[in-house]
Image 1: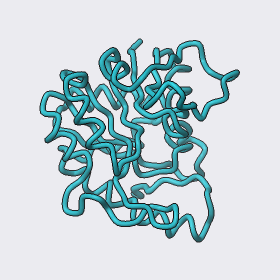
Image 2 (image 1 turned 180 degrees about the vertical axis):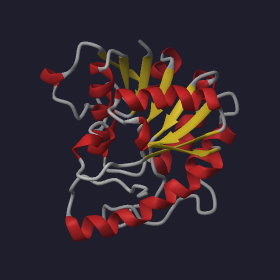
Image 3 (image 1 turned 90 degrees about the vertical axis):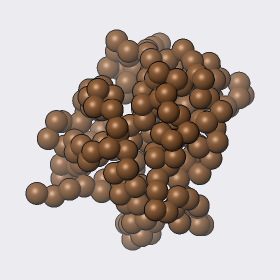
Length: 214
C-alpha cells in the first residue's frame, strides 16, 4: 500500500485519513503544530494513521494531499517545495475569501489555486480533485440519492491515474470520475464553489456534490 501524507488534520483531512487507512494505506496526518488536534476522536483513530508536523509529512509520504485552507495554501506549500519535489500533490481545497463563515469571492479569479501551485512547484505533479462537494461526500459518494461526479485535473497522466486509484479506494466508481484535462481545467471546478453558499443557505449543511448529469 501507499504512504499518504495529508496536510491538515481538520474535518476534511481526518475524514480522508480514516477512509484511506481503512483501505490499507499508511496515512500521516500533518499538523501545523504539535498541539493541533485532529477532528477524529482519539479512541477511533485507525492504527495505520500517524501524526507529524507538515514538513515531515511532506518529506516522508509517497503522495501528499493538501487539505489546508485554500486562501493560505499557496504560501504554505511553496515553503515545502523541496519536500514536495518528485511527489504527487492532490489538492482538494478551494481558495476563497470567506464572507460570514461561507465561501465568498475566489482568491484567484481567471486562474486557480491548483494552477498557482503547479507553477510554484514545477518538480511536483499537482492533481486537483474532490473540491466540488461537502467533505463527507468525499469518502461516501454512494450515500447520495443521485450518482455524484468527482472531477480530476492535472498535467501528468500517470499522476492522474494514480489519483483515480485513490478515488476508487474512497468509494468512487469509475463512471463517476470525470477527467477534465490539464491543470488549467481546475479553474472551472474551483469556480463551482461559488454556488455552495447559496445551497447551504437554502438547504442547510446536508451532503451534496456539484455533479454532471447525462
